[in-house]
Image 1 (cartoon, rainbow, N blue to C red):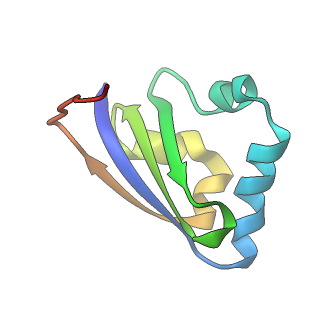
Image 2 (image 1 turned 180 degrees about the horizontal axis):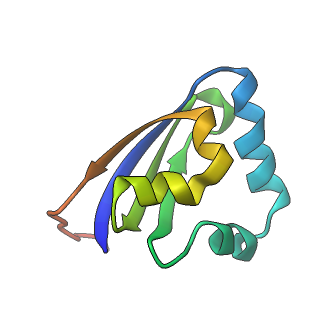
Length: 93
């Protein structure tokens, strides 16, 4: 699978509640199960909570379409800027 960085920008203030309610009510295992299949796998997310409408996510996927399909109805709440990142340099501690 390829690496993708996705900037998910919520389309409205009203749309903000749905993703955060899902994150608050689901276990990590439930979220992982819902966001992983044979075509796409959600890896990590960075967000500022309800202080910002933007979330940054790292995905491994076959294609941008596979990410949108995996998000399902949730994808419609966001403008999704999906970019393949073929060059990965890992300098973490």
